Length: 269
Ligand SMILES: Nc1ncnc2c1ncn2[C@@H]1O[C@H](COP(=O)(O)OP(=O)(O)OP(=O)(O)O)[C@@H](O)[C@H]1O
Image (cartoon, rainbow, N blue to C red; front, side):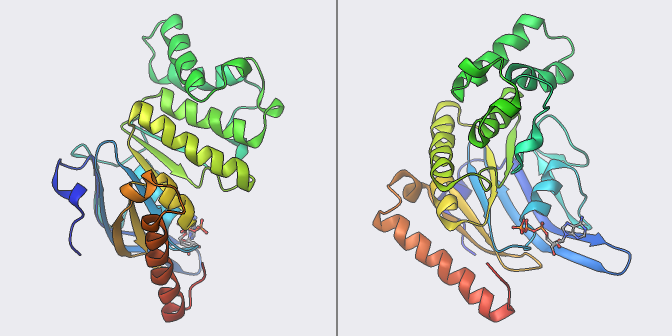
């Protein structure tokens, strides 16, 4: 596979090399991914795209340090990942990832306070305030999660993760539970946030549209067990409108890949 132009410039922040992930159950051994390689450079928005069950979430959990590879390794800025850490913050699909007894402000401040024991109250409050503002939730600082819509809850989860200023943000289908219109708005908002802060993003989805809107590069995975099928440059397509020729061509290219796999291997999309 030839490297895309962005592969050649600067060294990667995150390196996933030959990663095989397995789950042992009482009755079987499930291979979730098979010798997966990819790299994420600083300020990239890399998408893991593939059919259900191809191991996208497992790969994200591995980068998060929650599960260890049986083969291969994952390094962040040259350090091997062996456990979770504040340098990798995760945003999940579920709306219930916030603490229901804490306000929006407290939800954002809580992990900051835990991670930065020496920081002053006002530094923590300033940092939380900054990111609340970035996601447009300053007016809801004293609201509780049950008083927020699904989209607002996801904005809080994003602000909470961003306020930790991790090396890389890990997002596992963060907009999948939202209605179509809110989902689309959130995808655009995430890109606006990126233009503002240039964070590094590893984002899991099984939506081709979402991959094209959010991503600067797309790793297409084959069905179970997941293997890298292609790495595609999406930056110019993401900058255009979704209906542009470039975006349409990329959509068709990915669809053809995923549907071909579906018939070859009998997987679902
Ligand atoms: N805790 C677990 N125990 C056993 N098997 C698991 C576990 N978690 C995932 N798997 C299996 O590993 C494979 C990959 O699952 P994973 O959730 O990573 O895929 P995915 O691509 O994220 O799927 P989806 O898009 O449906 O969320 C699947 O076959 C799944 O059943």
